[in-house]
Length: 421
Ligand code: AMP
Ligand code: GLY
Image 1 (cartoon, rainbow, N blue to C red):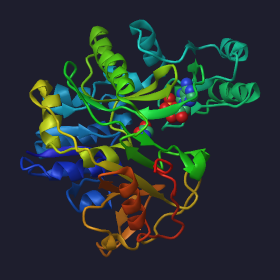
Image 2 (image 1 turned 180 degrees about the vertical axis):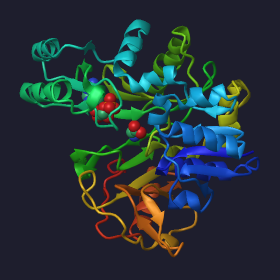
Image 3 (image 1 turned 90 degrees about the vertical axis):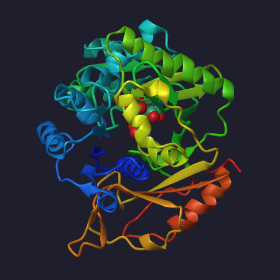
């Protein structure tokens, strides 16, 4: 089979790495890819958001399946365009991707279908938004309705900060059109967990749970990032909570989308907050998480190609994915300054010194003109991931290998999956 995979992060490298293990795979093209995907597939230098270019690439390659990694092309309707030309596609349609691309839509969905969520409201009027926020018992979370590259949720510590966030979004256009409408939500305390599931709109196959680290610095300090590390499974999540999440959130959302006339196909990834009142969904994502994928796919024992194809063909009931009991930890190595300004173009040393079985998933990397040297080319540069029978062992293994890799300015968190020993 010939597969076209859209995206360029460590998530897509992990997907490509797993697909490579399939005996059914012939050609794998990653658009645009990175230096990691170039080593196991062919890169095609087109932008993920250039729908015309992607559709024409699918035609040229006679792709048997197109897999879409990031949320933007989903929100732009790439799946609809490809489906109209009879390609098999892994990912939700534009109308189903609204579960992530419009927080107003997803808020309305969970309210109407009784899916556990924080209290909140949608606002188009800035004055009403401010009144509501001021009347809240404690400062609420302010969220831009549309996609904002993971930066659209502000968690203020005071009423003044909350007013500033509403001003920034609704008056100053901090997120463009994405912030003209906001969702204001009760702020929940607790532990966060990412639930992922494959679904063809009817059958749901859950993946193991994972937890990511959004802050840049150890101890959850510093600014928010795209994600600095991940572990799976979370030892603190008991079976009862796991079952509640799977049935009352993930499966309920798949049913709700079907009932709403927006059948959902692809990966559904609810992000949840868990506390003594049980789990509540704080966001839905319409795709694999990054860095969650880098700790989930190494635990998949089955053929990923069989699963994604079954999803694309509405045959997921025929596939029962098997997962390893091993733990997996991913540590993100980032450029100096990230998530603020940073420089790129530095050679990455030590990539050939990692232990066999330890995975180095590339994100912001590219090959130098010599065709061999790997250079930094983005904020998040690599995810190093290791599996082991326990989290403690996986932790020793991953950090032992991280220490062998270096580039100018490199920084990473030293506390990923710490505190469970
Ligand atoms: P989101 O873009 O909705 O994923 O939000 C980004 C981050 O903001 C989440 O990962 C949480 O850490 C935090 N957050 C979002 N909603 C809430 C909430 N209702 N209560 C507390 N923290 C939240
Ligand atoms: N791990 C956060 C995300 O992928 O949205």
